[in-house]
Length: 349
Image 1 (tube, rainbow, N blue to C red):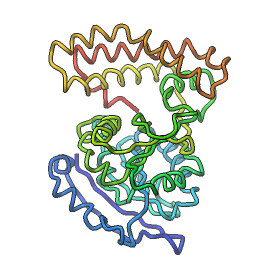
Image 2 (image 1 turned 90 degrees about the vertical axis):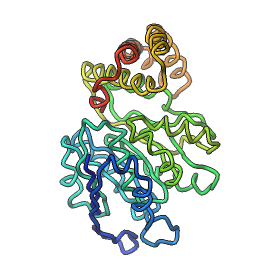
Image 3 (image 1 turned 135 degrees about the horizontal axis):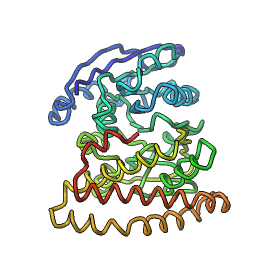
């Protein structure tokens, strides 16, 4: 994968700190295995005294189309702290990111050359390697950030002992199918989430100190989700915290058949990420054991959602969908343990 990093600068505010226009071309494989090259990319920005360094970079892998990406960028552009933020959009063949960025009043860095076949984690890796901020946040291309989103990140990260902060995910679409798949997919991150030290943070609403994320960005390059990064950070004694004040709304609409297909591929690709650390016998054990996952996961989600701010009638109405989603995801996971991930990660959106 060839990564082309371009800075697109449109400074409409006198206090906007970004004034660098530059294009860099790298091979993703080089970034994966050449730490010196990675250090060179970030070296000129590493000093906190650099007046051009943004306070926060927001990394977005564009995989779901220009309409939802535009909505996400609109929400970021409305933030009061927008002048301290750069947005790093990783374009793919699914989205002409440059056309969505053109005409926007603030700076935006576009990473070209990504492909859907790379998978979202690797696309995010390319964005992370292009990011210049003191802090690096990762969001999906179909979320609406709350007006206090950036200010919450800045406030929490004033504590130098904290390496990462995550928030909660709210529903941004109505309708039975949208609510059902949302509750199944984001049960752990629906408010109120646990406040304080907590390593289980949502991959679509998280911000890291750049040095902490870069130290373990190889997990993303290997096609693994942010949870692998978080586990490594927690294992090294880093503080990861959760707060209800850092909010994004999930704004993508789903058709049931479409989401069930995605859920199956997510389950299979997730198992594929795990089997790299498992021997053949353990793979079989995990595969057979995953047959009890539908009951276990549905029970766990139901119990967890009963403690969240979800009306009881809505939870009861959506419960059949939750059980269906968990069953399909578990089937994909079982298949992944036994037969490998195939190309399922490419299908996850």
